[in-house]
Length: 214
Image (tube, rainbow, N blue to C red; front, side, top):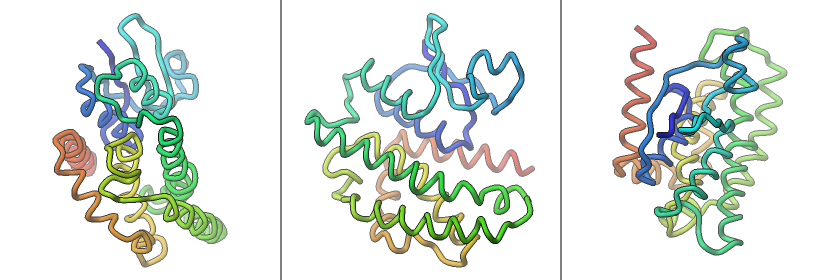
């Protein structure tokens, strides 16, 4: 059986969990956190999570790579369109969400959520890069009803876990929710949460966060 290794607060771990649940793939989980210990690096070369262990001991790292593997290995419930161009458009959306939006805002997480000293130069740099990333994302999203169109895709699994944290981070850092410039995103996320897989992952995330704060 597949084993997903990571933790329930991680948005990238949760993206993979949603894919597994939506596709109906049986899997186990192992709660682990990033580490640079030698024995951990033997399992995940950069010491990052999530990573996926196959039943024969082989492993995959990087959430997008894992999701692509699951799509290829378990095609029964597709999360990519059949048309090659439309498949590429879904991958494009995931790249914009992660590379040009979430990873940009992530540069502020230390000061916003973990008490690290504020860096005004970094804050200003993020503001500039994020404006560009959100402008690009807004040009691609459809919300009709899903982010790439009429079919639930890998892009929805990514958007569901990334958009709320981008919203929270921008409100904390800049005093306003930058996703207000992305019409319909709240209703879209609420619609996704009506799906059992999305709801389960979100409830587990909230429980894990609450437990960590105790």
